[in-house]
Image (cartoon, rainbow, N blue to C red; front, side):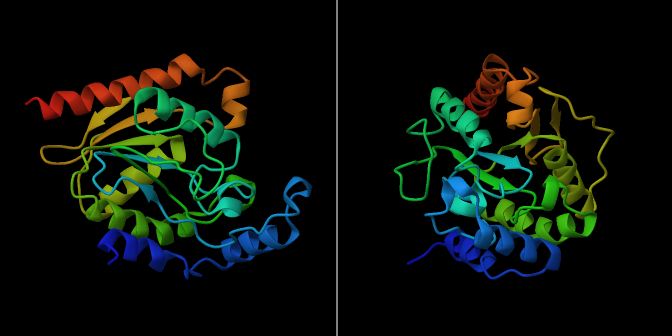
Length: 231
């Protein structure tokens, strides 16, 4: 039988709340990129995936138009994933460093990957209302990850989205600023938040985010989880 988390992720696939994003993801899936003309694009909202017992949740912006929108799995099939998954493998959060498509053997350990938006926004710029529509899904995932201890926000939009979600619950949060390596605690019994630059090609190829910088984020995550388990 499917778990509550699996049933929830399956329910996302029929979402058409955002007309602009629905039209864009389906147009991209139909026209395709020349390099992928022989492939069938996913072309639906992309669910989160990972370890249902995860203690850390990794949150990005949205599926890539020719990445996750093609493969159906977050951060798979584009340059961002090619930078993320080797880092997770080196840190022990993944069983392999490559992630090409669903069913390729990738298993996440103690980590769950999601995003602020489940459909690719044109020019990677979702509207405020589109973000609000999708935050309901992220909120439900958080509730279903019973062992969750912290978030890693990949990029400013992920960071802002997490804060927006908790504020929508009526929480009064202190001023928090995004920056690579910035770390915050929301309060007793609530997850912590660690920030990283997004592993986009623009950031990695310009040197704004280097491999040692990214590895440092995952070492800090491991330290945080180890500290909590030894208390």
